[in-house]
Length: 261
Image 1: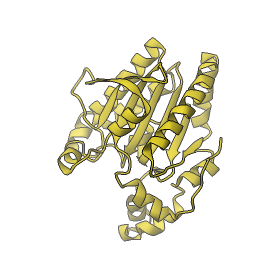
Image 2: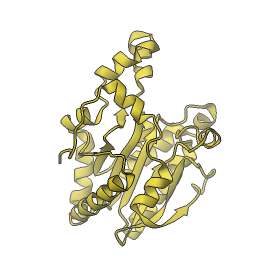
Image 3: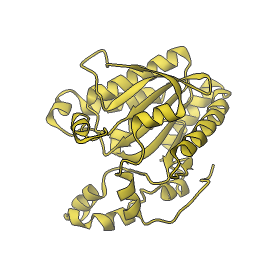
């Protein structure tokens, strides 16, 4: 598949736009789906508010929706660590994905995170294990899975919810192994060279589409309802195609998608 719309912006400009609050998590849910019913908790440690998940209808068909939420105001952003989930956020997502598989519901994830929360509390609770389990389980689920990056797609924190049959990106989003600041700090020992890093990392939607890392670029416009309508239509089409595949072929194709990287 190809993008419907390509606008030439520099990688630096795209990084800046990806970090803006252009689309809000609950706005995406209400704009694309109907009858959303939120589910809470990982049944182990707690309920991470930076991960919103539950049941919804997509054009009358039941699906499971999982969205990473950066928060709306400063208080909300602090509570959600600017969209950096703790281990129980990823475990909640894994629980909902396995539940979706049990009842035959397609899974749609929306990702906007600079990365998994790097604090001591997260490490104490097994952050790496939680991310690894999410990836491992995603590779085995016998239902269609589509992941959409709508802002930042940072490192394993994004990959935990993007091990899907298809990965899409909003036109002004990024998807990379780490931030430009982190890249510059590691490679050049100078975080101030972040703009230079952004230019060479290949983190823009066009770069990733050209390298067959993603399948589709979602065109953005000032009319959010138009964007949501396009996503709703395309999700229905792609999920129908994936659902018609034999389960063994679906899983094999998903695994092959990631093995080739």
